Length: 85
Image (cartoon, rainbow, N blue to C red; front, side):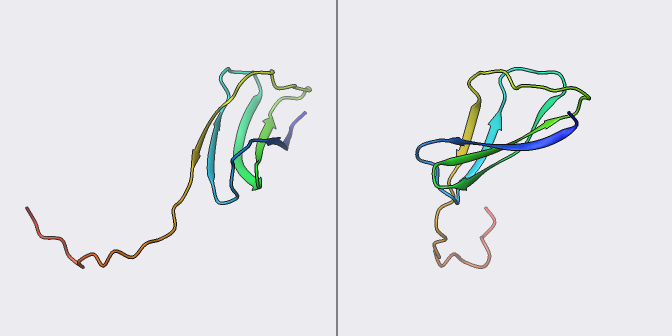
């Protein structure tokens, strides 16, 4: 009650540099998702918050997840100014 807890899940293919967004498919009174991150290789860490005075157990359901994978920086020798069209 009135706490925030991080829970981890195994998700094959996740890499430590990945950026993740997690969405709970249903509303559950008093329960919210704070942040999501890749805490280790193939490990998703999701922060749940309980803003009520009682205990809450998140419903068992399939959450949606978006993964953004940053690519290495590549120098392309672009011009300092682009011409106006």
